[in-house]
Length: 409
Image (cartoon, rainbow, N blue to C red; front, side, top):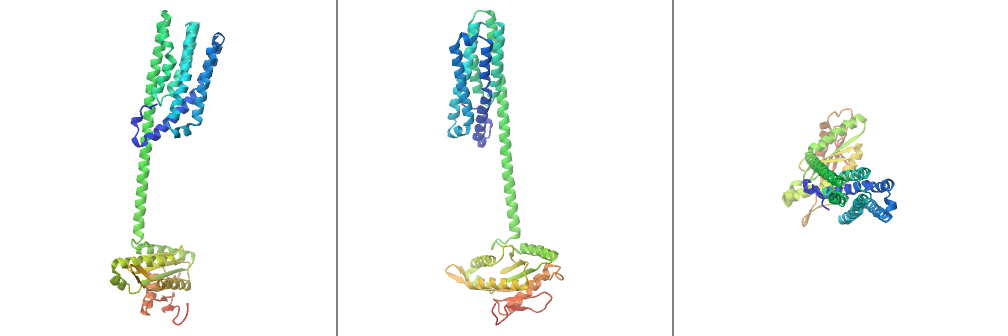
């Protein structure tokens, strides 16, 4: 079975559209097959065929019952059968068509031969075939070839008989039946075209929607990447100067509003120029990445780390008092000192100096005041021999080392 109109569908969507159309075809035919048992009942009530030709009638009943069973089974197991291959749908479907439509066409011929073409027989049979054929025209819209086969099985036995009889009434009936069949074929062809035009439009719409979604996702991903690059340092992966200052400003406003503490650490790697001179700038870049990772591993999940300058880092510590911030700085300092950075076959022993301060909620209205105190504490740490932590308390001009010289932290 080949569904006409498939060429109108975009190539990348044809397999899915074909599957949906054939599933739709099975559903339509299963719903339409109920007409055959009803017409058998009407035939029995309107004519004496059951008494005159019991064998033919009950054979037809058995054939149509088998066709109904095949259609219902196809509908129930359509997904499993289609997954095994299209022939598992096509062959049983054709078998059910031959049983139902072929049996009906032969019964139509048998009634005409047995009871003549009286007005009541003609009216009854035409109403019978009108109901089946009209339903078939709608049901078979996904496949015009199957519609043609269905109509051929229905009218094929009777039309030649009507033309071969000598009575003028029979000839006129044959012409009327042929014209009716031609009308159904033309109508089915029109509906078939409309069906596949609609499927084509839907497939194109789905494709366009997918393309728009893909473009939207790509644009969002690019925008997110640009946003990330605008706020993060490409070398170390931590926030850049703009990013960390933005976080510092937001945390300062929140701390002032909620009357909570806020700690700030400024870090400068000691004599880092020597690392660049010895290992080259690529080695220096690798050292910066390792130091940034080591600092980040010693922070809380809600702390913020950023690269403030060449080898300077800035850390924002929400809800952190001065002593707690100093303890955190000392922990990071010890981690950097105790773990030399592997660079090729050698290792660079790197130390860092720390300046620590906390927010003065009443006097610090701008982040530059907070950063200025941290910078002053960092300068004192470097002036005191480097590789140490210095604190600058709010409202104090005195900078002190942490831990104090001669004491154990």
